Image 1: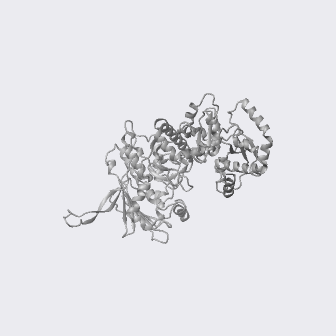
Image 2: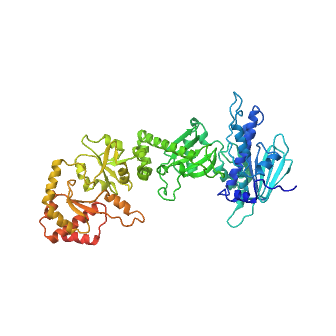
Length: 635
């Protein structure tokens, strides 16, 4: 029989289909199984149109048969089969899809099921008519045997080069059998793996686990041979067992009342490789302009690489139970990147290879709804199960705070109610709302202290007046904390004030006037101290915030020392200018002593106070050896 040419252009187009569209060769099995599932859907739909007589849904199947002897992989289904004309039109014309035509016919007016009959469940997968050709990525020859219920059998054959043949063949059953003769192995390409049971099982689990029909394969099983005789080792034999490789019904498509917490936990552990159960599970089902189902999990602990660039964020993306992407980053904002799970939607606009999305309108709608669901679940946990929320926040609170700060605070209002900070008064974490609710009537601001540890925050000299007034102090110990609060600016109309801010708003007019007078009285001494520390501080001034300590070091302007430390620690930060201000307590005996010292002694004491202030601010000593020598000398 003469070989027929492919109708869609030439070998060049076929080469593009085989070599350019798909990024992974293993995708071919997903495509062929999806086509088989579509064929069964069509046969099932036709049976429903005839009153549902004939085969039961449980009678349908897809079978894989690998053979290392003949180097073939066979995919068989008992779907609708193809006539000679369909073999020519659907396989002989690249990008001609019988599935797409079937789907369009179903959507036309007049194609609805008769009154009183339920619409059949037929979410067909393939639309583009190119998935079949992906098999040429691994096969050097393909034969397709097929027969319809009321037709004769035929075989379609091609080596994927320049054409195909179609001829009659006495195929014994209704359905289709595709026989792939695999390419020979070569350097860097192990085509033989697609003949191994383990590889085929793994690929079915990865891509086609939720195809609604059983995918079967004969597998070798090692079983005991006869009864074990006392005193003798048990003998074993190898038998072939017919195994169903896929689970068929996705967990997320079962009724919520039918799924137990243990099933959710097992699914999470098995699919997301965690040894612990999830902290909580969120299930979302939406029908409308964009219909989808989502199954989300919040882990108990952060993976070791969670805060690294190499961590892969995103949700698994399915279309009608067939996995399209292993990690779709666009479904989650970065600040909720800790969420694990999946989304299954029939409404995604996929590209021709079904590996990527063609348009992002549907995806944006899903992502926007999911972030609201996650935020609502976290707020529910915060309000009803504080201990569980504290566990979550210990693991992922930093991610939420980065979300507040990121993009100049565009998500700050959305996330602010999820924040927790340590309360100096309560000795535990509190929300911003809880802090404000407990504020004294005369307190005008939310006060905080930033440091590299809780002890550092509580020991800051700048916070002495705040705590003496009886006001609570939030302790910020993560690098991002102060940046987040500065982006927020206020909460429930209460501004945030750092203990290091120039004006804490805690002094009365009389106290301010008294401090101005003391500053004027000590003007000469302050100028001399500034000269003593030339090049190290921009200013030396008296402070009303110090009640016990003699000195503290602050940054001039809007940048605090903690922010300065964070910025300078960043890679390639370069030189970041910072002007320091040394503040002194005019009531402290040490300050009063300074006025009685000689110029040389005063200079040494000024250096001592400056270096001590650096230590209390969490900054390194400029010269530890010189500082140690100075301390010994003054002792």
